Image (tube, rainbow, N blue to C red; front, side):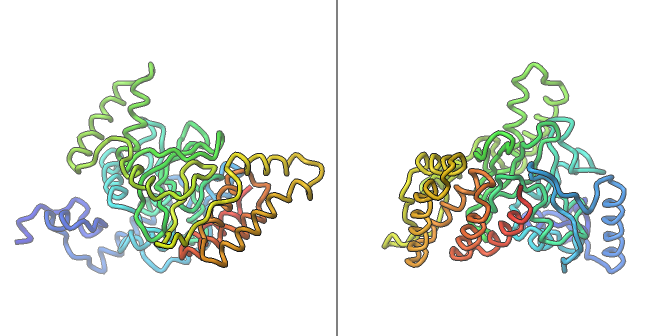
Length: 369
């Protein structure tokens, strides 16, 4: 029966786990020689593509921190999904992999660059594992790959602009053990605000295409790309529209932070899990601004010190969301409260049983400037 099915074009190297795909296409078994050849192919791709395996540390843009010795235990060719989890500490959704297939059809030799000529975007982050470019990078370095200045651990960047410095798009999730709720965008050169884009990466790119099609510089090539993107969305059943998951999540948001996306934490029937800060966002911002501009630091610090005391009380009584909210607000305000953020955020994530986020933010804070 298996021989009657069409052979998957990726053969034994296919990484897709979708049951429908496995049912509809035949996948020949891996052989030792096949695995060896696949590994050699990935090594050649990393060498010949012109992209360095060890990426250099950047300045305040937060781009390209990655590089380092290989600490991964999984061979990309045998299990790319597991390799991504080991290197980035989170799983990626099905649309992530299907979009890679779409880009491979557009540009078989360099799928990560397939979008540049159309929308000025490049696939980054976990996509570089699929491109074979992070095979010697440790998780400590990979979690900083294309991690921008205002990116909290909830954000995993997968697209960045090749023309507009600081603009990037990433998957957003409230818990590292969950699949992402949607994709967000940010331009770290402008603000800390995270803008919700779409529920899947096809729609997120589609929205960028729609914006460009309204400009005077829209080309025939862009229109043709839009047709291909729309056709693939129809084939896979994705809607090219703004996020609907955002509305569902908004019902669970307990507080809006400076980045406007808010936080979601578990709250039980007795309202244990979160208590609000004693200041509004506006009042907190004024307090922080005053601390930075005041000549009398000790006096200006008093309201913040009181709030920090409230966070300690909240942690003692299992209202861990309060510390998370304050930590994210300080993180988003500037890099002038580095020590406070370092003491607040990793602890908040640990208390909320989100250890992967604690690891990510610790790495980020060591490099963040």
